[in-house]
Amino acid sequence: MKKLFSSLLAGLLCVQLQAQIKLNGDYALYHFYDQEQFVTTMHVTPVQGNNFQISGEGWYGEGELIGNSGYYDWTFSDGRKGRTNFIVNSKGEIIGHVLGAMPNPRDFGLNWSYVALPGKSKEKPKA
Image (cartoon, rainbow, N blue to C red):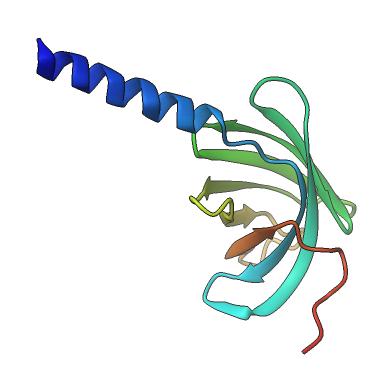
């Protein structure tokens, strides 16, 4: 019985910790494999429950956060669309994998990964 209670308590704490993760505000994106290389910024706005809106320069999207992982579907201003799947680590950083279509069928499409640091300004860091 004591072991069952401990397991239930640990499960409740885990659920409570996951429920506390919220995406909100500005993030600076860097290439996952070269985290010195700044890419762009994005802004996340909570909507309702686990849902959020997200935007950057020339694109916007909507997504959902479930626990410490989620996705967002995005559209560029030129019509290209895609989906980003991500996790949020213990520091509040978003690690995302971007997949999207290119307008030219001969192109391979977008396929890259990033780390997004929370609370960063919309100014590109100086080299």
